Image 1 (spheres, rainbow, N blue to C red):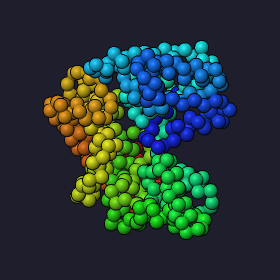
Image 2 (cartoon, rainbow, N blue to C red):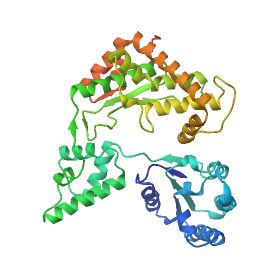
Image 3 (cartoon, one colour):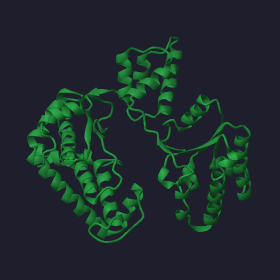
Length: 394
């Protein structure tokens, strides 16, 4: 099994918890640990020993951490290519020995799953992939409660959880240690004020600050529903934020499983991602910076999809490039000015289409945005009531 997620999100803890719940032995290894034994031969012996130790103690869980450090054979270059090739081949040999390691489950953990050799992820090897996300507000409340060990007032716990937006599980554990240190210096039990004195201050967003976000998210929802992207699970626009530049709104989608997507479906996805920007322009006659600026933003995702369509699926020009990682797609656009212009043209076309939908159904955008001003979370069933005939074409 392959575990992926940002640093500190609990991948190692997950693997050890699996071992405990299965009453299995737990072994941890990594490329760095194996390499520390010496040259290539020593590393390969250390690798094989880790597998042998796990087999001898079966049932067992063998965790291989920082798995992306092994790299991919198609990216091997220079003097280290031969070294890296032998390491990956040896690892493939160990993973293929499923019959010889009965009772041993291998769990690989990584921050960058796209950097792993395809052969390591093929069926029969690390074919099961679980993405471990950063904890949301509810999860942060639960993690804090577990680490603190004492009951904090619910309003204080919620304030701390809001203030720690973007914190990993590891960061929350460190926060608890810091709060306990403050309490020990004062010779008293830990309390909510100890946390609040450390975390960024939480400020309520004004109506003026929330309104553009409500319009933006309403645009995403309306364009996506019109184009049949899926059903809205919920639309969220927070009332409080710890950082002025953090994202306070998003749309949660419930989407059907499609085995073979059409090129039009990908273009619809781009239009939905640009729907927030289109709504700002149509309703507010202004555009805000929230659509771009960071990895994972609307513009980043839309540009990547457009690049894959043009460079990998022959839209606008026949051709094929085997690139899927966001940073590789960005590098491809930087290196090829013709591709960059084609991507910009495709994005402009889909932004225009999103604007047409928003203008045609401007009343629905306003109804969703006004409902969001009243409610922090707008469930999908409420959205359907707010915009009757939601799937009517523009």
